[in-house]
Image 1 (cartoon, rainbow, N blue to C red):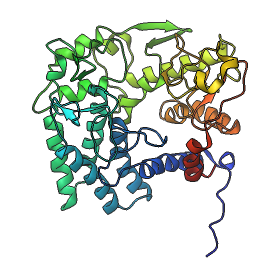
Image 2 (image 1 turned 120 degrees about the vertical axis):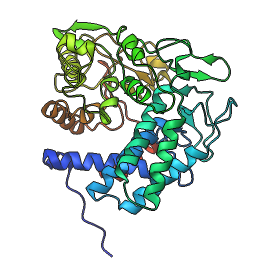
Image 3 (image 1 turned 90 degrees about the vertical axis):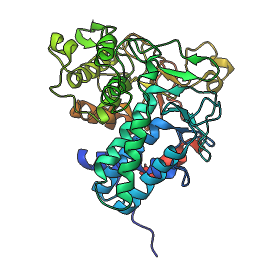
Length: 391
């Protein structure tokens, strides 16, 4: 059998076709790095990487999309979903350091084949919320009988098991997490970030609901700023402005804070993108290629001192870090996913910048320090990207 004809180069595609290719490539990651027994999905493509429960939440949300796009048939999507939901429903919930979760929440990172906690990580409130958002998405989409009925039953049970009130630890707002070694983490959710999904799911819980006053207490910590001549509810890393929007359309929905500012969370994300573009246009650190049409400062991988070598030990590089603009931290690393993910908010700007990144050969991360060319990841990290996207 003759091999299939090569796919056309990405930059030759129309905007719609380009987005379809990139989205299909992203979806293939979820299938390539899912454990067939637990349904957990690896946090990264690095060999031996553990699962992230947030990634599972995104995967559960993507299976219905894949069905609608014709990338996956409905029965297989339901089977993948059931594998994940059955695992979480049967997983150990206890104070044990080796459990999967506690009080209906789950540890941030789990061993792929066993689902047990790794790295002494925390029971994560926000990552559990991202997981549950995916669980409820599956319950909404799979509305048939048989396996789909089981999906709905398991999803309902998982949502009802989450003790959102416990996560307050007696305070007005929720904590960031809990560890068996030390109890609740000291840091809370202060200032705007991706935690809107936490409060909305928590307040809506039919069993262990957060009081509505908890949301008001959180918004009291917000920082409304004028940054680079743009009025915005500040959060530095771009992902904080994007994650909750994967499940909730905030257009025209205003809480008390946003009514006062005559804005909403969708408009605010557009403003955050405008800040990023203006910051990269001004380029105060003089990084190579930063531009109004080349941006995307967010959380993710970046070069480390070990990668750079001893001769560059004095450079400011952060490895994995939540980078932000304009107040930093910023070491010249862009996250290439950030612009495609911003298409719902600023389509023309995001697509124009995405094409720039592809023209420059960007892959998983792109480092644009003023003294050096972009740092490429080792070949073993890039292989799956090339296989799935045919770049």
